[in-house]
Structures are given as structure tokens and as C-alpha cells.
Figure 1: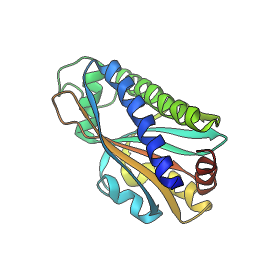
Figure 2 (figure 1 turned 45 degrees about the horizontal axis):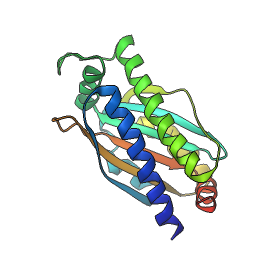
Figure 3 (figure 1 turned 180 degrees about the vertical axis):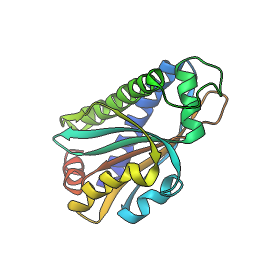
Figure 4 (figure 1 turned 90 degrees about the vertical axis):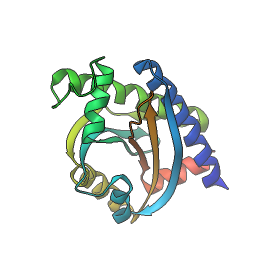
Length: 192
């Protein structure tokens, strides 16, 4: 029952983030069927294509009354297309991440991550603070290595929230991962 409440709270927080994302881009952003699951840490990587999938990760640490990780991940072409949208360039313009692309993507991560965490904080009464975003262009396995190491210090399972969102007329698939550590999961559940 508490896990269902947490799932609804997270879905609501994701909808808030999607609305802000939509306003930033000036395009409709649809959040597609968020999925919440307790996974063995080895299963986490398979959710977004496997450890060797190259892509763009927008990462924020979660601190405050809870701790964990927030990651927006886009496969390589999707991430570059997102940078084009943010910079109002024709699709296909971005072929590598320069300073402008990184700055625009970090701002997107900052705004959507902050709105997600603020909505979750409002629903639980907890203080939830995002770190400064990091923009990483790497294989998914490398991006997740530090996250998995941190989560495995406190248990062998992680609560993972994954969703896809589609931008405008084009299907631009990204993955949103929210992974509180096991102690933080218990705190979240207790405050619903």
C-alpha cells in the first residue's frame, strides 16, 4: 500500500517536471507510463539498453532528509537532438557536446530535477535537495558505475523509477531514473 502511494507521488512529481520541460522547450512533452520497481542492482542497467549503450546522462545527487541519485539518460542521437531543441537549432545540428550544449542540458536537468524533487518534498514534508547537475557523455555502464557502487554499499536492491517522455511531434525517448538508497526509501514511505 505504501509503495503504491509512493508510486503515485512520484508519478505526480514527474508530471510536474514534464510540464516545466514542456514550457522550456515550447513543445508538448508527454510522460509515458512511469514504472517503479525494486531491482537487483545488476538489473538496473538493462532498463535503458544495457551497459554499453552510449548516451547522454544528466545527473544530480539527492541530499537532505534522503539521499540517492537522479539521472536523465538519452541514447546518443536522442541527446544531441534534445540539445538542438533546447538551442532552437534544426535537428541534426549537434554532433558533439560543446559548452553551449552542455550549459543548455545542465539547465534542463537543473529545472526538471528541482521540480521533481520539490514536488516530492511537498508531498512528504521532507527536505530534498538536488546537487548541481553534471552532464556526462559516456556508456551507460560507466555513468552508472558510481551510482551502483553507492547503492550497493547500503543494500543489493534499489528502488528505480523509469519513465519515457516524448517531445513534440517527434518521438524522443529518454529515461528518468530516481534511485533513493534503501534507508531513504524507508523514510519516503514513512512520510506518505
